[in-house]
Image (cartoon, rainbow, N blue to C red):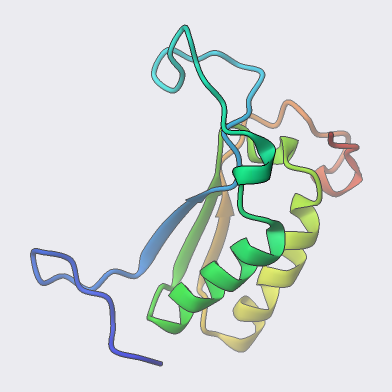
Length: 116
């Protein structure tokens, strides 16, 4: 592990929140403006880039990773990303891998859902 990340108040940073998409079918006022402009999909990080970025932060001492959005389950292939991130849980370098979602897009299990 490299030197830990430190915030301006000299606290170690061990928690990272990563938005994997700005897309969502809800229009919650606390999250989206009336005239929301979404990023072009080509400007979003690929899942491989997200994996590399998260892995780098884990190497810098991040122990808790929260995946969020928009609605993260609308991101195509997101479950493969989670499958890949579990290697850090198995090795013990990551203690928590969590997801913020409204669960709108799930069938009996998020893994079985067909996402666009």
